[in-house]
Image (cartoon, rainbow, N blue to C red; front, side, top):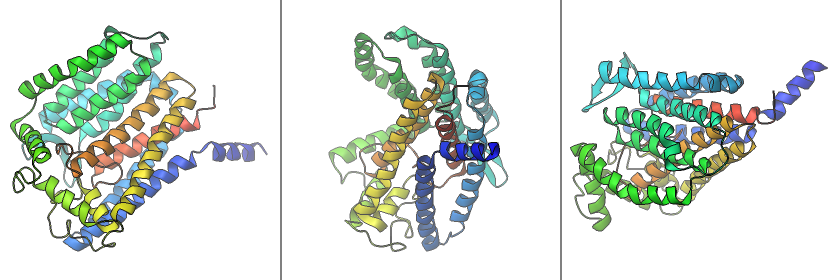
Length: 373
């Protein structure tokens, strides 16, 4: 009888909504990758993605069954481990296309900056868990978490990887929304942002990153500008999305991926291929699934048993949110191309593994939200 009650309790606690959303998005991503691969002569890519999904699901299961209070206990060690990985990749990492972002183990390639996003969230959650003040905070109260985030960003920019560094900043700002900043502090942040942008442009961005921003601005002012240069990807992406119209050209009937109009369609621009084949209706359904996933993360945060769980849920939810927003901005030509994957949809082992581990943390917080011991 006791075993039956425990089994029923675990079944009731399991977050079926979260599981269903992740399964649907991942499944649609596999079908989209198969469509792109089969037409371009690389049908094996979807199998590789499936392997990563299986591996990531096993990792998510392991992460979800360990009470997250144990992660809180070792939160700063997790953050330190992330810093160590970023330093190590700068020393021993493989250089590809002028960037040093990967560890290469034969056919296996791992990008530490992806997993560091999770470790940063755990570190920030650890800090805020022990900062129990209830009154509104001033800017100096954010010094320590700001330094934690800034150190990670500097190391990632050294690789260089502008997109991931920007995402770490956005995750930090999203989490800090929980801290209830004073009005004066919020105004200070708002008016200091342009100054920070000027400094970043002058001292942090590489020439090719500046070229992408300039291309984006030219594209915004004149959609016909630099169509064959730095603006090629954005232009071809918008053409693919627009050609899908309402109902799309049909599954396996797209042209952007198979004919190599979008060379990065498997990693940065899979949404363009999907929108071309399934049209506005299919794209809207996919974005609706992402919206529910982000809102569900906020719901999990609101029901968490403690602040650590709340920050974890908000951090993971914001990671999904900003990845989707920036990727959509890239493919629709309203943001610079910064190499941002679409969660659980883009091809890439490190990305899939990171997002599924994040889902495991979300599931963990959700399962334990009503437990008080």
